[in-house]
Length: 188
Image 1 (cartoon, rainbow, N blue to C red):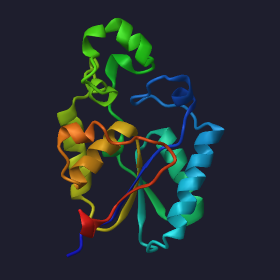
Image 2 (spheres, rainbow, N blue to C red):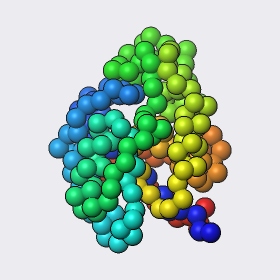
Image 3 (cartoon, one colour):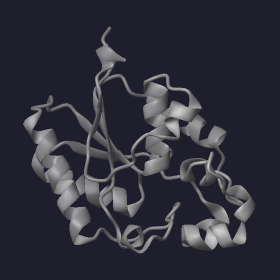
């Protein structure tokens, strides 16, 4: 049996992204650029002529749903939200900037640690193991090709699992908005 193809998309730019504020599981609206990024993703997916049975799975957070809705205008695929696709819960750091966090917790920052790693160290936040379990639970329920609209940290973990990447490589994956990261099932 062929493994499913995965199309991973980070939500479009938000007002918080533009201001350098960390969302975690907070929300802010898509900017004009974020809407344009979602349209770009939708056009790309439309040109792939994916089967009509393809489903868009989205995080339930507003910025991901808004991105999925724009994509749907190009592809007409059903959207299903799934809480396992929510972004990392950043606890006490949600709504803060990296500058504020570095001021409050300078001991967490070093040249050998990425922001991806630091984001899972927030007081009262989720840890890597929690996110990894959520990602595995979601992936275990997919058997056909899917479009996944979600967030930077959880998408890196999902991509890492599907490609059997070690943690260090997962920390360095791109989280660029407006792109579609394609993982073909038969080439994993």
